[in-house]
Length: 247
Image (cartoon, rainbow, N blue to C red; front, side, top):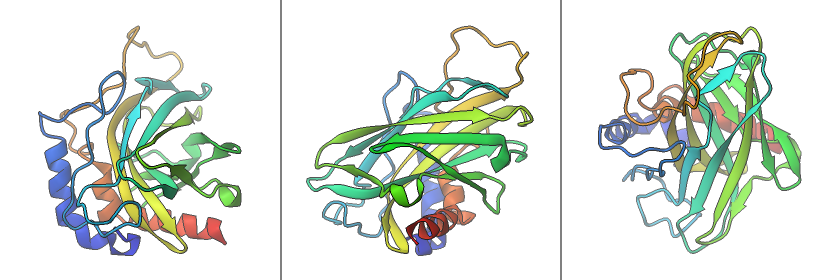
C-alpha cells in the first residue's frame, strides 16, 4: 500500500484487524506461533513478489519479549521475525513499530530502542503520532539501507528496548508495519501485532516466570495499532522520517 494512500484504507484495515483479534486468533509473541497478516484486497501491488496476491509478501511476528519492563533498567531483548513468502528478493524493508499505552502518557523521551542489522547496532527514531502513540521507525540513518530477505528466506531482527526512570507505568501494546522504501514513498508489505507488556517501577512485584501477553484481551485500545497507523497518520509519519533519512 502506498503510504500516501493509507488514510483511504481505514475501513478495510479496521475490519481486518477486528477479525485477527477475535477469540480464534493465534499467538504472535513468546513460545506461540505467528499468525499470518490479514489479506487485504485493497493492498496496492508491491514490487516485493509478483504483486498479484492480496496477501502481504512478508510474513512477520514479534516474539521472545519479556512480560515486564522496569523503569530505569537496562534494555531487554525481543525479536522481529521476517519471512519472505515470494520467489523474489525483497529489499529496503524498514519496520515501523507503534506503542500504545492506555493512558496515552508515554512519550518518545521515555523509551530507548535499538536494533541489530548488518553493519552494527542502530538507534530507532521515536516520535509521537497525532493519536499519542509512539512511532518507532527503523531508519538507522544514512548507514542503514533497510533489511533484505531472499526468496523464500527468513530473517530475525534483534531489538533492544528500555524505559527511562520517569516513564509512566502501565500496560502497553506493540504492533508493527513493514514498509519497503521507494525514494520518498513506500509500500506496506507486512505487519505483526499483539505484543502486550507492562512497564513497572523498580520495586513493583512481578510474578516469577511470567510471559508476555498475547492474543485477545479486554483492551479496547489494543485491538490493532496498525489501524491507528492508517487513521492517525502513523505510516505517513514514518514515511516522513524515512524521507529525512534518505536525504
